[in-house]
Image (cartoon, rainbow, N blue to C red; front, side, top):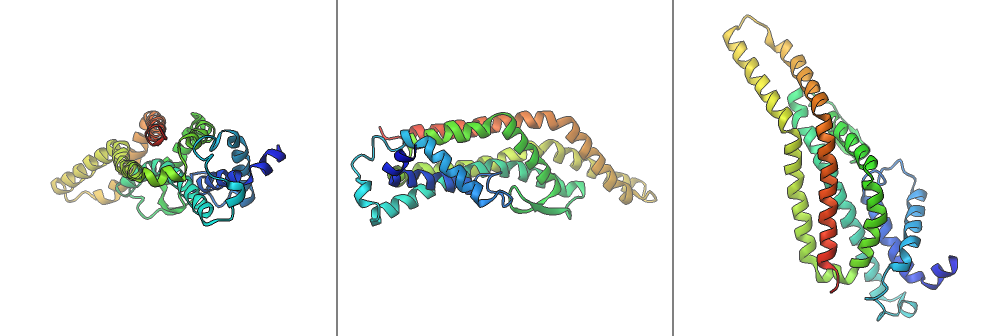
Length: 266
């Protein structure tokens, strides 16, 4: 085991750099609560598992044993790090959709001032956005998408992608990331639309009642009513949301696999 790592040390470093860059950007593992030693150890273990099937065909022309200190090898390391960052950033886009959905109806609920630090997204996030983010993380772990990402996804990426492909197929990567950003807002609106629409109707109703009966103090009752209606809808819609979260992960991983097929060397 150690002999194989030493024999292929330059290639092992390339694999480890991509795995470590992905771990630093993917949700859950990128949290500051995860020790840096654990991240490095996990990257090394993943690199050891992937090493036998990494760079077996396309890179035989490069003699890493004699050029591991060259500028070309440094550029390869930078390219591998970029591939890991792109992969982790795409997974972060999926979770950003759930967090954005919570932000859409948080202000209508009256929780606009309840922003707290979200350790998953590492930003100031409204409390409902953080709640949906935590639910999505549980679904991500429960459905096996986490294992699919780190077992089959990483192995497939090393069979299809390398630094040379990143440069040659950069247009596909740009379109892929732009489509991910587009689907972010679409998914967020689809998740938040039932609650946003219902709270809008509640606000319109309260406004009409305040005009019809000015003597009624509807301002003090409007905020608790909006909060109660929003939590009631969350109770009803949470199973449907979990199913939507699971389908979102499946669609995202299928798009990622399609990218691997498109950019793979023919």
